[in-house]
Length: 334
Ligand code: SAM
Ligand code: DTB
Ligand code: SF4
Image (cartoon, rainbow, N blue to C red; front, side, top):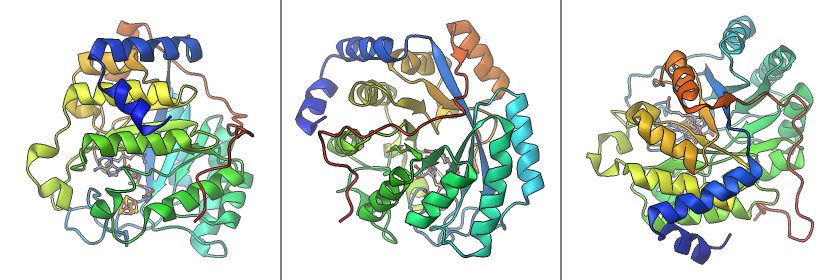
C-alpha cells in the first residue's frame, strides 16, 4: 500500500479507521483468536550495535550485563514451561550483530533450535544479521519464523542506529524469505519519529513480497542509560496513535498476525481491548520480554476470557507466505 493511501486512512476520524480495519480483520481472522508468543533471551547483553533504544547494547550503561549463550537444557526447561502455560510460539532472542556459519555459537544455536522444534510449538528466533547459508541451516534445524525488525522509516533509521544500515536489515530479510522461513518484521513507536516515518515504515512492510507473516508493533520501553531512555517523555506515544497504527497495519497487511508487542505494561486493559478490536491478534505472553517486564500470564488469560478471545492454535507446518508473482520479489538487495 502506497504512502498516500496510508496517509488518507490514517487521517480518517478514528472510528471510521477502526471500522475499516475491523472489516478486514473479520474477513481474514474471523475466529476471535490471539496468538500467544513467549520470548526468551538466550544470549543477553554485550551487543556491539548502538541501537539507541536497546538495553543490550554494550555502548550504554543500562545495568544489563553481558552473558554467554544459555545452555540447551536451560532453554528447553524454559520452553517446556512456556508450553505448559499455553504459549504456541517460542521466540528466542540473542544480542548479537549477527551469526556466521562455521562458528561454534552458530552450531550451538542450531542444536538448541532443533531440540526446541520437537516440543510442538512454532519456533521463532531473532539473532541479528544472517546470510543465505545461515538462513537455510536455521530453516533445516526447524525455525518457522525469524524476527528482524525494520523498526522505523528508512529516513529515520540512521538517527536511531549507526552501526548497521536499513539496507543491511532488508538483506537479512531477503535471505530469510529465500530460505522459506516466515518473516516477523515490525517496528517501534516512540523513537522520536514523525507521523510520516510511521506511515513510511508501514509502506515498506506492506511492499514486501511476500508480506511478513507477523508484524510486531512495539511501543518504546524507555531504558535508563540509552539515548532514547534518557530523553524526556516526549517520546511517549499517545494511546490513540497506537490504535491507529494497529488498524492501519491490519488494513495494509491483511493476512499478517499483528502483534501488540512491547509496551503493554504501560497500557490499561481498555486500550489493549481497543487494539484487539482494531486488528491486533498476537501478543508476547509471559512475565518477561527480553530484559524488561510484561503483564502476568494470568492477567492476559483473564483479559482474553473477559473479551471472549481464545488462544490461536500453533501451526507446526507453518509455510512461509508465497510471493505474489505479478510483483517483483522484495525486500530487494541493493
Ligand atoms: N539483536 C537482534 C536484532 O536486533 O534484531 C534481536 C534482538 S532485538 C532486542 C529485537 C527487537 O526488539 C528490536 O528490533 C526492537 O524492535 C525491539 N526492542 C528492543 N528494545 C526495545 C525497547 N526498549 N522498547 C521496544 N522495543 C524494543
Ligand atoms: C519484537 O518486536 N519485540 C521483542 C521481540 N521482537 C524480540 C523484544 C522487545 C524487547 C523490549 C525490551 C526488552 O525487554 O529489553
Ligand atoms: Fe544489539 Fe539487537 Fe539491541 Fe541492536 S536491538 S543493540 S542489534 S540486541
